[in-house]
Length: 326
Image (cartoon, rainbow, N blue to C red; front, side, top):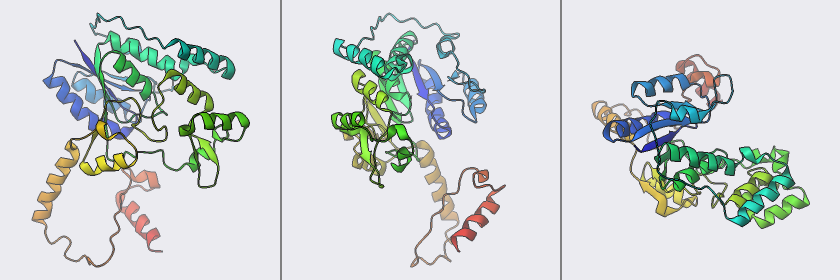
């Protein structure tokens, strides 16, 4: 029996992936797992929805912030046996580099990216995982280790993007607030010269890393570094499933490998388009009072009014337009 792992990093990921997971569970002989490294606000809802489809939902963090043994959770009530005997070993020079790095930085490599890669390789072997479906491949998460693990098991890693996905990490100024990321010493300048892809200059003129120097060295020594650390989905994944040709072009313009991007549509958006088109036909006078010669202001209110400290949408709308018209 083969299996597939769907990964949830944020609340917006679940609904998009759940529809695909249900179809895979019902229409194929593949076992399906949901996994999240976090305990998200709606975790219990996700678990209930998955339980109704006989899909395990596994989270590495408990409601109180403790760690959970996810190996036991993945193997619970499962009869997975693999004939493979995968040896998760790096080339000799990379092993030496990691050992030297551990001594120089005094970092605990048991929790580093290579340790995670070994863990996921062995776990995916035990559950015969052949598909890994991620919402994004991101150096700030454990995705590189998971992609390595699925590849060691001759599987395929997909990224199924969602509407709010942004190719980069936003404002570089955010990283300048963390002193350990500033390139302000001789050894950090040397690191920036050796591995220039890991540093950028902010608008304020400060050169900054996107990860701790020790983590940068570990990515490089283990061979798991992405082509562009400042962009998501530029690592070792196999395919990026885009919502449209427009999003595909957007990703290509930000440096994501065109050969890996497949524009297959997005069922939720396709359904919304169909519904909105039907409504527009029934209500073709809805915008009769709109002056098309004037510029339009498109507003995307937050999913929850309480995020702007309001109790309902009416109050949120009045607050927004009241401030916009000042």
